[in-house]
Image (cartoon, rainbow, N blue to C red; front, side, top):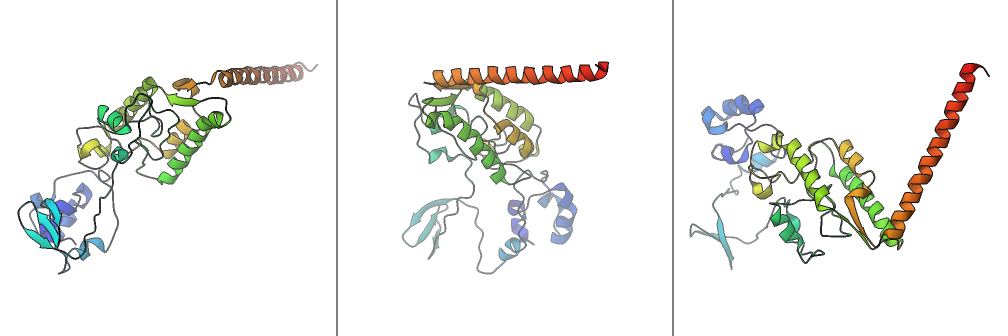
Length: 279
């Protein structure tokens, strides 16, 4: 069990655990029961974590660090904490654009584009308008609350490979998702997410860790749905450059497939009619 004085900061106050926490800790109900639905924050199962915090050589501090000095850490309160080793654990960073100084077609950086949208923003968590031939893996709104992200990443990779193939074959210079398609997709995402458990508290699932902003980490559906979206590119949502010959090739291919399908259907109908009439 966590130290009593740290329960408010460490323990998600899920309604289903509300009574057991209060009974075990013998503290007033109001001290531990700021309700949040299970799953609102990432659920961590670690039977040794909370007990480790009660060790005599562990000191939990919630006040802010001002700076790192020669022999330890200077707190904003003015207190100096002597330390031999500092482990800088940053946790999850859902907005990786601070580390990705990539400049797009119009000179806008990835960070600047995300900031203009109020947080990470992409189509299928991979394609970004203004950044041709760039495909992210595990980008915005890809993570799942119920399955491994590896499956979703593999779906993204297969989607990207189909877009990259004509470029590698010399049939196109680049492909880039349109702004309109990206906006429509993100509007769908946020509509689905607005009634989800992830709006119930502040977490890294949200832009700026603010539950009044967009949810930027999770996908609002099963991984099978995400795979279905990624199974093949919707080419009409992409702008191709230098792809005229490839587009003509695709058009001919669609016409050929349509003609073959019509022949097969006609043949099947003919055989069925002949059998029905007994001729």
